[in-house]
Length: 462
Image (cartoon, rainbow, N blue to C red; front, side, top):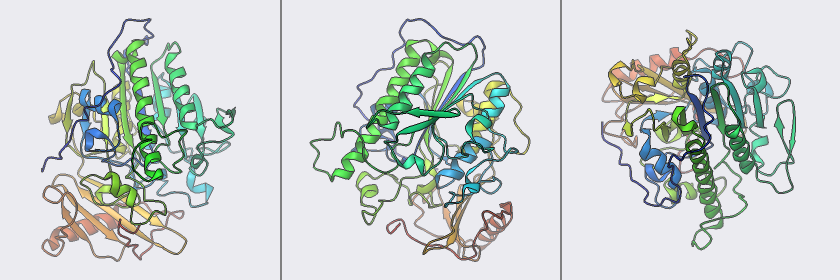
């Protein structure tokens, strides 16, 4: 495999140095798990993954100290299916939620029969908390966080609600958390996470911290430290949002070191899909300006690598050695990984595989995937159609199809990471195999019928 060039950011204003203090370690040997999810952060938006303009010293240091996965995939190219995959261990073909709701609430809630990683951990004695953007069920439904294994919830229940960074209130358990006038919701999430980590824990815990940064709108409280940059104002705001999130992740890691929790806590950081489109700026100028998808082609909504391959860092200095892994992994692997760490038997019908062998350097014990699958469906508006993507993991061959009747595009990622050279005609046998897989992998869905016609819009016009 061609090696992806990763560069180190030399700027660092936070140091995660363990200090003596009152330890609040758990009474169990089961590790604590913190999963930090950003929203629409591109593969190239972090310094360690090649970013040159946006400062991310905390994440760069986390990457330098932890295990970096250079070929990790989101559950889908947009929010809902990606997060559903993360929670249930089922990829888009088998999962119930296959796309964003599009104004239909029934598309945005997990069912009673959809078992989440939080339910499994909670049943095994974990204290569980969801802070941030949920988007998989509203109050009174089977998909609300309190009904899906979380003891505590503060945040947005829906994706649309999360588009407002300055709400009057947020959901808190079965009630409301009133915010101060002009209070930035991201700051509330960080404060809630810090409060959760500061409390005494008699059980191991799972904290799902689902930040909304850097999803639009771009309106942070300030544009520190980019005030003097000769950039468009919107670009400065985008960069400031990411650096603000990076700063707060640094605070969390420092707190873990201070209170002694870091010795028994796995922290994972990633994004829910590829970088967003320019939201009306034309030709993805912001994505291009920051090189947000790095060496990859495609953005959010694409099943090309740029829409689904995401930065992924696993940090646990006491247990995980620093390094990189180019073994293909994906969101569906989190559930069995958490179960493995917690001594839990995962459900038998999931698509994920435990990443624990990879985390601890036992690559030969990692079973590995054979195939992966993604899709995007545009159900309404002026544009209707579908995109499907599949990866032959053993050979690192990617297939893309626009519409169920569309021709297969084929890319050999080892030699063509940017997916510029379609070799489908040269390899008709492989194309036929990938087509057969796409035709068979998807569980039928009345809520998510896949259109026959394709939707071909290049990343330059998205």
